[in-house]
Image (cartoon, rainbow, N blue to C red; front, side, top):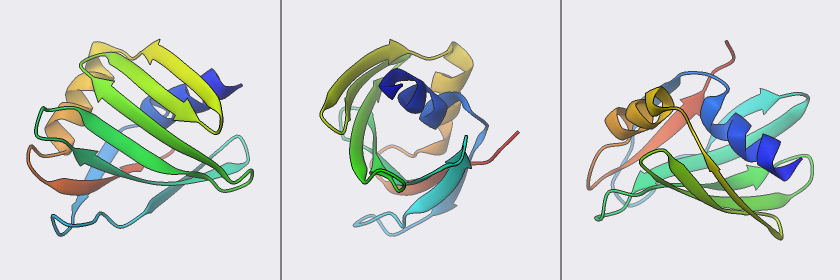
Length: 109
């Protein structure tokens, strides 16, 4: 279940970005299988994209780090680790700017 939720965060649909101040990204929201997610995406100086947020229906916090096609992190108390497609990794790399903070929105297909 946790791996499915984590995969859904990155692979459900295309990402679209909205510019935000470098100090904080506004929370974005999407719903998948009846669960609503709130999150923000940032890029660290080392290029790693960090997705932080909450599964609103359960209150579980998540913190996922994306390095290329590899994703590692936590959802609630569970550790997750999985890969995403090169297309998803490329989309994230292009839509979350280096040295900045942007909110990424997952829109339903």
